[in-house]
Amino acid sequence: MVYGDFCRLIAVDFLTAPVLTTVPKKHPGDSLVLTIAPLFVEEVYTLADDGANGAVVLMSGMVRNRTDGRGVISLEYQAYAPMAERVFCQIATEVRLRWPEVTRVVIHHRTGHLGVGEISVLIAIGSPHRREAFEACQFAIDTLKHAAPIWKKEHWQDGSSSWVTIGSCEQLSC
Amino acid sequence: MRITLKLFAIYQEVYQTDQLLLDLPDPTTAAQLLDRCIQDHPQLASWRDLTKIGVNLEMVPLDTRLEDGDEVVLIPPVSGG
Image (cartoon, rainbow over all chains, first blue to last red; front, top):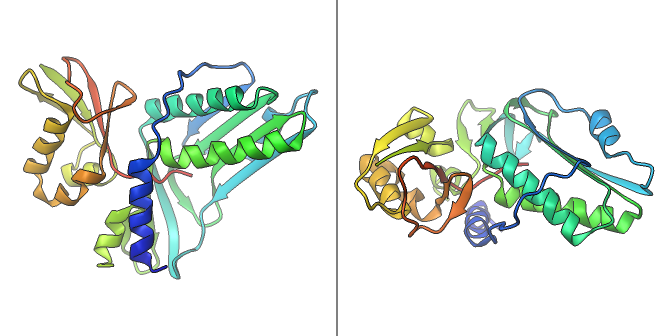
């Protein structure tokens, strides 16, 4: 697949992704945070810890040093905070509807300028059994990527920068 | 009527601000507001069909009629995570 096809796929994906209509309902076992401060695996793991757990699945997303063979120096994240936090709450609510045995839902996302290797997102799901934790964690990160109003801009090694969307594709004329 | 328009990513870059207060004729739909933005900045035209619209923190259909005091956001393709 060439980069242009990939960009078009992303755009079509964004336009056709189902809108989350779940009414958000805050649960005491949830920790949903959008922050400019660094994220810590230990902290998120601890928040997902619960005596009823037999498993915690933790997903960590970080800044990669290359995109399609092109060197990346940093990523700049922007978010529409009140709506993003509402989407996080919708995701957590939906997780609890689909996998009622889940004990904890932790979603922490960072904004601002992040260098290579820095963590941009942490999601942890606690559950009595691993299967539900894996499934719920996958659902949470996939839905976040489609539905949360968060954007990132890639700052390239050559000094240029571009928003990660079909727009960056057009700038590259592909 | 007056609405607040929140701008992010490419929209924020083109407008060089993160928020606008706009006085709009009543009725105005979300699609009409988007068209007005494209008219103001034709370089955004390629984004029109890729942009979703949120009103008061919820995604809405483009034919949604805006109301006085609404907080509207233009949402180009997202890329969180």
